[in-house]
Amino acid sequence: MKNILIINGHERFSYNEGRLNMTLTLKMQEILSSQYTVKLSILQNGWNIKEEQEKFLWANTVIFQMPVYWFSTPALLKRYMEEVYEYGVFYKGGSEYGSGGLLNGKKYMLSTTWNSPLNVFGNKKSFFEGKTVDDILVPIHKTQQFIGMEPLPSFSCHDVVKHPDINFFTENLKSHLKQVFHL
Image 1: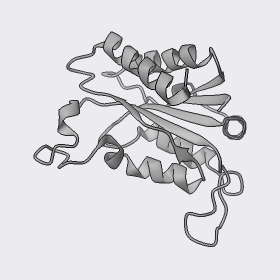
Image 2 (image 1 turned 90 degrees about the horizontal axis):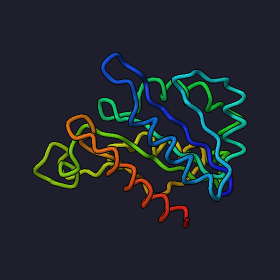
Image 3 (image 1 turned 30 degrees about the vertical axis):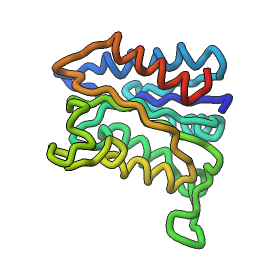
Image 4 (image 1 turned 45 degrees about the vertical axis):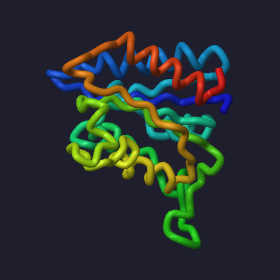
């Protein structure tokens, strides 16, 4: 895991500039750069498809930093995947559906921000009916599995609009990264 690509998938809206996701992206870069070579992709700034493909091929680990919009990835991150995840570069036909990933041996981590409070996850009587953050994000997990990557433990920040405690979020992120990346 010596090379890490961090993708900030935030999509800017007039009511949401993405300061938290950028703060978390830069904090990850700062923490991980002590022992790893880190590259960033800030999707809001645009991208070159071939350069992004080269970053994926270079990386041992890809971290997706993103807000969760309507229980899914931002449309900008979805478009990025549609353009960058090219047949013959990231996947090919396999003997079984989903077995043709070409990024085998690479890892990925989801780092997400949610407006929902943490206590609505894993609680059968709550809105998510007992589902976890990773249960809600199955489509992005399956997308990464399809191209051959394996998951690392996910990280999430909750109640980020009503209770934006940046210090709490960044300290939790630091602890998570230390554990996952053995810092």
